[in-house]
Image (cartoon, rainbow, N blue to C red; front, side, top):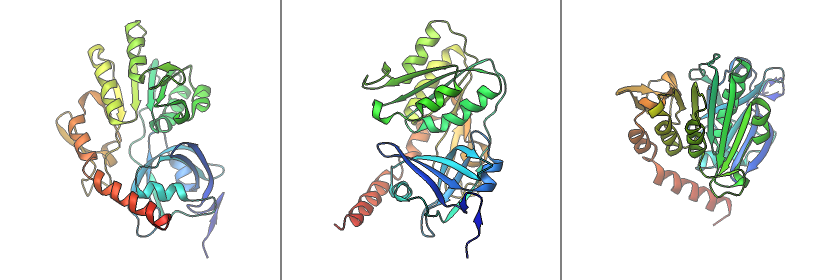
Length: 287
């Protein structure tokens, strides 16, 4: 018989919430991870015994209840399988916390920029930076208002929150990078920037901050398999040297990241991922 932990059976889905189109929040029973995790760390999980291993950043945790919170966007078969789980279902394997925690200290005024599902990754970093005494300005963005997540949660832990949408349906009309550029152009003091989101977004943020030499940290979502540094699948080039996202990251100096190489590696399996997702959806609908 499975041993029941605080909050439920180990790796059991305790709560599920649809945050927006194709973006889902899961609260999972994982007492050890909940107790040990720090901002910026992630878990690697397998939905079932035949599934692939994927990394997901830990958005929040409740050590008393023994739960962790993950936010995912449906992009392939594995994330579709995760999104289809219901409270009471159980994830086969979950390993963590992994990766190096975010460097947290009182830097002064920090700007945290989150785009898309990266807003979820930004949340624990914003929270930790605020608790460390920083003045935190948070900029979040999405394509439309309907796709924004965690707005109120981030408002509660930020000194200032600025929302942007690509289509102008809510907040500032434009990209998060333009909002950051405006802050810089107005001469606002910025001691450090954290950027988390799609690779093109992080790249542009780094281009905005580099001329002013503002330290900029990015969280990379490289393809990952074993998460121990053994397989080399998550290798990235930082400052001309090979680094492994799982053990050296996931956060790096954005001004040193080779975004061209990162983009190419992330696109290596796009076709296979799309075919796998299409096949899964056809099977689900009996086609």
